[in-house]
Image (cartoon, rainbow, N blue to C red; front, side, top):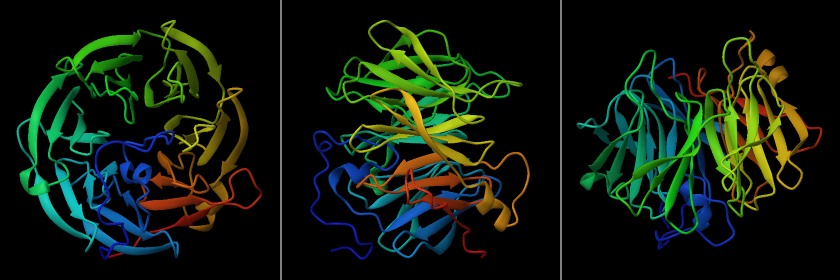
Length: 346
């Protein structure tokens, strides 16, 4: 067994049936256990690594300027870190094994690993998406394709963050922050782009789909003066069918492995809301605001952005990327407050 606690011999073909696939924590759908969680500090140039069994900081690793999102490979061996260039970390020893800055890899903010375990989308700020090949073997990593989704525009022309690969392997669906819409790429037809929902959102960020893939959820961050919301959309009807009020500036979305819950981070409130996918109603909201205050972090922008859920569905890991801190929600729906864990100082 490798030293990072990940299982050896795990296949990298497709996720287990009935288990929601998370493109930033792809290893969980293959039954690969967690040992670490990872939070970049977007205001600096380093990544904090946390031991999830002890809920303690483990290491600080210098990566690229403006790191933002991380993604593990399907076998749990490597961690990719976004930023001004791409950084690859070997999780067996927590060491950087490659810094990747090739044509097509511009300053970027988000990553999504394919269910095949071999490819990855890299979302650039200029509105393009790079397709990487051989992410399971960083020494052979290469840019396969550059897809232009949005034309460059100030301050950025970015598409959304976390998207969805359909179960049949045909499409990839994601939000488009810049055009306030939802689009899809045809993975079997040379990444052909088409609209799924042409309008109805307000700076949508992450996106997840229900288990039957007939409806989806997009976290609309909101424009100036607007608190944002989660929008439920119908793929069949091509429109938004419901607006769910959550906290201020919703951004990160993830779905429980069973598909029963959608969790959304409310950036300005420092909280996470849970939506029941059967009723599309908020069942509870858990706040980490008091944890921030206890850590000496104050202000109106508490900044929990990205989020993922453990393979057993019992623990949420939320990423305070402006501070490099991990927020852990272990008592989902209960009364225990979450834990905020700050990283290694140096």
